[in-house]
Length: 293
Ligand code: BEZ
Ligand code: FE
Image 1: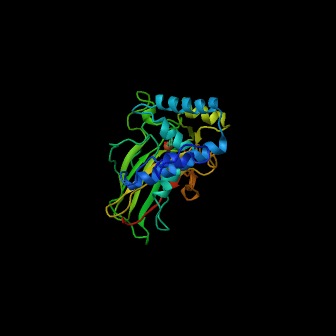
Image 2: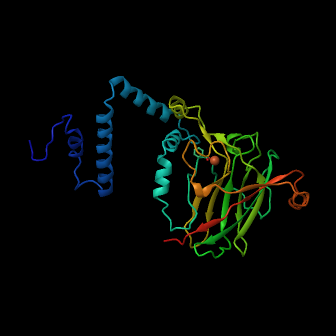
């Protein structure tokens, strides 16, 4: 037995596995990641002491999760989302100077290639829902406007579905668009007030949520990716206040600073000004970007 050999025992199980890696032959970051993973995994097993049947149920769950994955459905990401891990990774990787807009998860419904549209355009192509005007300003951490910033916007429709979930039912690129800020850092667009909706829950993650007494809903929100030359881009959402799921988002995406005012406006003149024939909602969605490192 060499000096390094550790035979397997319950007490020293993690040491035995870690000792099989040769730190001189393993990438240092991979060594650190695997050492920690093995320690936590063995610690978990020692704490829970699963029966063989329970361990096999876990393996089956992960197998089913893999089988559910396709090019457009990523059940493992959904698992990471619903366990709060996506938000933790996202938050750790987006520590920003104070004052910069907070970030949240990207989610599976962003698409590349949304159209560039002029300010004021209405991105609601299916005509459903309560009208909404979103106005805002993009500024740096000193409050100076950022001209030419790009805002990639997407949201679900009044029935809680993204266009990509209802191909052939919703118009392509419904509720999507890329806007550019003017010289004062301002942008605006018209749309429909978003609604809460369930994350895809017809797979193993949905079964897990049900088994845990959890619902699959996300509170109503508008997604944004905001970027400008020389600044760190941010991926975030703004949430509608008063939504029943704000405090129990299935993917833990809500940060308090991301809940903005939505004000109902039933002034006739204002309705005419924005081209609406019914009362509408006004949301103010401002962003603060920090300089790129
Ligand atoms: C979304 O907001 O689009 C989303 C985020 C995480 C999981 C599912 C959906
Ligand atoms: Fe969403």
